[in-house]
Image (tube, rainbow, N blue to C red; front, side):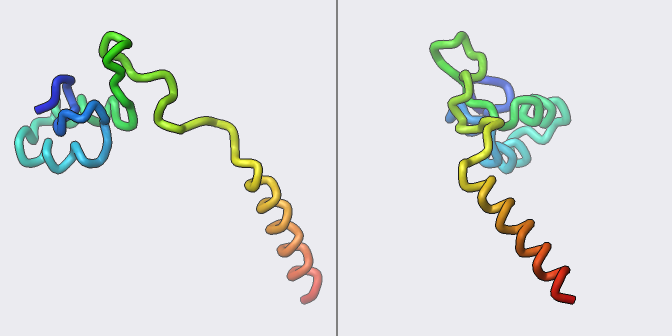
Length: 84
């Protein structure tokens, strides 16, 4: 078991790789809650065991190409509907 509740692989990541280890070694509802509560977190050793400040690459800002993809998709929908 890892050094933090829910980190069953000991890699300081709360991800899908912890689930099969929990199922094999622990299997308790409390162990599952510990893992599920922190799923997606990365533990920061310098932060006193708290999650790292957005080191996982997740952000609310869309990629620049996503806007172009949306516009092209809407134009294609408009032209295909108009052609019928």
